[in-house]
Amino acid sequence: MDNHPKHSLETTHDDDSTRVSESAPELDRMLGRAVAGDRDAMLWIRMRAATEPAILEELVLWQADELRVTRTARELCARADRVDALPSNSMRARRVGLGWAVAAVLAIALAGQFASFVRTPPATQQRAIAAGMSDDFASTDEAFDAYVAKARTDGALVGEVAPPTLVRSRELGNGGGFEVIVIRQVYERRTLGEMYRIVPTGETGELRPVVIRARTTHAQ
Amino acid sequence: MTPSTFPMHAMAQLNDQVNDQVIDAEAFEALVQTRLFERAAGGDRDAIEQVWRQNRRWIAAVLAAHAPRGCDVDDLLQEVAAVFITKARHLRDAASLRGWLRTVAVNEARMAARDKKIEQRSLRSIVEVAVGRKGVMPVTSEDARATLELLSKLPAIYAEPLMLQAAQGLSQRQIAELLDVPETTIETRLARARRMLRQLNAQAEERAAGM
Image 1 (cartoon, rainbow over the protein chains, first blue to last red):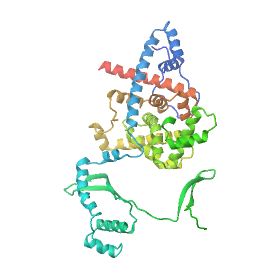
Image 2 (spheres, chains in turn blue, green):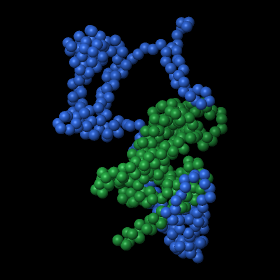
Image 3 (cartoon, each protein chain N blue to C red):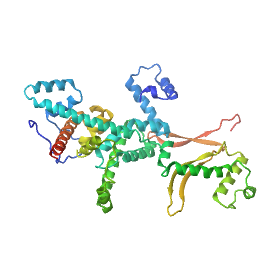
Image 4 (cartoon, rainbow over the protein chains, first blue to last red):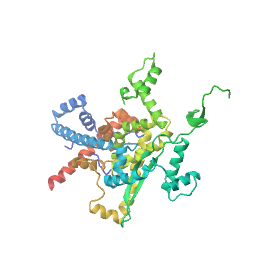
């Protein structure tokens, strides 16, 4: 049907969102309202179809287009629902390039290392602890183990060391093995005289630290 | 978010605040949203995630309207999420959140369009497109992919309200507020968008019939 002006897709459109002079043919407005479920618009179209039956065909085509757009939007929403702001554990696992095989190998390899947290430190480590946190270590692992042992002795380490979290892994190529990135976490306990709370202040809501002192029965 | 999904401790605080006051559902919802926003701005991870989940669908719609053809909306959405997490603490006003998120989404889409142009100039990219490894939006159904292709041919000012209405079920008034244009303009743009889409579909159907 050609009883309404068609809009050329080649037309350039400025993006001035304050422009209010836009208009659309009345028929298009009514078709748009009808596909959105407006009963008055539907009635208007039916009345006009009495003299222009092709309008009903046009309405059916618009409804079919609307259905396609709705289905597309539904799929888009389903995809959007899979995008979280903060990566969950399951997302982290999905990002591991080489999957469970490497994760399993890593777990076995690290189990040996982490067992050393609970067993008696080796002679070299005892030496290191006795000497304080010096740089007299054969490896960074040994230094880390010494730190954990020292922190346990001093009561600065709370509970268990969390199991390492696998972040990502990749094959180095040329038989060079695998590069594995893990997060090792420790829970520490510290005693502080005072703490700060960050609070918005003033008209601008600028964040400023406000000191919080521990309550005491002693005069300060 | 409905009040029933609001955490109980926060709900108790709200009840204290509105106690002995007559407050309608819309105002209560606004209050809930403001509190949620404040928690998100304060760095509360649960609140950040909740705010994101409330908004991600319509943001995907905005990206679909503005992104260049063949661009992965999922990747762009992830970029918007990253900006949201980084900047959430700097937001001052719950009322401006949607407008700000839309601006971020449009900017991400524009950057993707710019990157796409640069990418398309490289020989490697041309080869990859030729062998079908890139340049395909990974939507699950062929029909949806085809519709997104058609929508990407529409000027963004027309595609955006159409997608916002279809994806999030936003009313014309809500779309008008989001895009900061009069409601009548939105109705006009929706009508034009549907007319353009009909023309494109008709062309596609003619091509298919001629094959």
